[in-house]
Image (cartoon, rainbow, N blue to C red; front, side, top):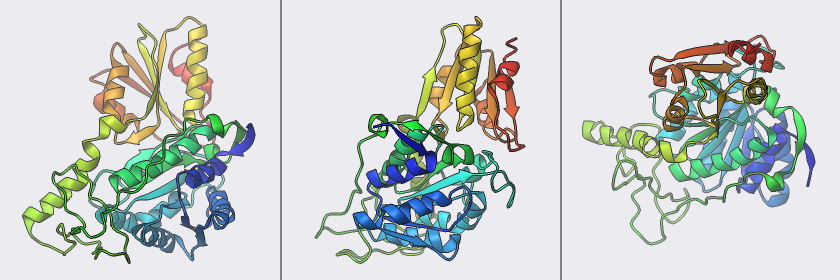
Length: 372
């Protein structure tokens, strides 16, 4: 069925289809329509949606609801992520499944509330203290907002981590024709819970990359939950060995699976010496530019990133094979270009940057490709 939807509408639909039954948020442009949509759609299916008193309360509600057994979602923009920061760390430390939608706008600070940008990319990666891995997905279309929201819930449940959906004002608030029944919807992954009656040690793992099962707070098992460094039973510890084991686990459970969970779209041309690497709303202009360059006789490859972190290094290296020059268009000052340069092996990496509230056009990318 063809519908006329905006990206934020598709996030709401994806969350519901992923089994989300709790939402808390605070109004902020350009994410407020997710709050409104969840408050409208959750009660009829037995869910709960709360407009919190502020962003700190919103993510706190979501962490509590998740640990009580519900799939949870919150949505905000850059200023809200700033306020989420401490509780993002709590979700990482407590291994709490949670999906956080960041509908990015022009920053810094209040910036341009109704202006588009994608300047939060590294902010999401390093949003809290400790530097431990997180997962960040990046949609470029309404259909991808739907599908990647479901992926985000699956990844949150599988790895017991907060997962970010790095949308943007232009993706979230632009309407387009879409048939969500034909979207690439992944099977929904349910939470792995500890069996009733078994001994339950909340953070025990057999090897660092293993993810422990969960038990609902208030259920039949005793669950200890703390923001401080703790051992496998949830007791606060200063034992260096136990601390290193905990930190190693929080890192390994994502890093070990980075290649498996990488999500990209490859459109690689044999013999191409130019490669365009794009994500988010700018990927739409990149597709147009690459198509036009090919129509004019140039061999150009395109790699569209749907997962930004962990960095899909294997896919990027495959795309780099044979390329002499890489074009990285971004609606920021070159944040992800740094990741490409790290892997480029001395190749010429050219950034196409724009941060004046206007979209990067296909013409700007063609100019960087030296296509007349």
